[in-house]
Image: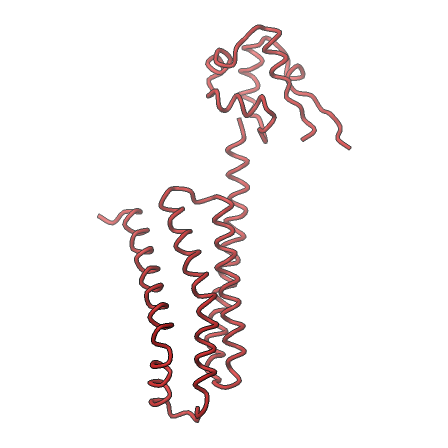
Length: 69
Length: 149
């Protein structure tokens, strides 16, 4: 998928662990892992909102578009 | 009280009964054909080998169909309904029906009533195929839902 999830980068910048973020945004660690590894097919606005709030960032800091050949 | 579990159990029991019937049919086919030929008023002299061939060849798709049905019910029992494997089993069932229809239509050259079996089998295959397409779409929807975070 040409949409890249840069959650790891943002988490490292904020020095936040997966467990802590999962707890803050109210999803399981397994689901957070799906999101981090780029296996997710879609992301809810409510999840995106919770992530942005927890990491104090913008959606563009987490998601990026990369053209595939 | 009638429950989902009991319903699946009943379906599995019916499939197992059909498997036993199929094994019984294969084991007693020569005797059954003799019995049929002695009762039938149609001019069927010398058709015993054809009847036996139809039964033995037809038993192959029938066995595949029953096995797929049993596995499908096992998955449903475990709560795994919308999975890719079930779509594969439904595809096998559908093709087994079409294979049965082909065998029956080929057998109609010596006994015309096989045509009715062929039509029924082809119709059944068509219905299962539509169900397979629906389940296939449901599997895609479920995957999308499962991977929506």
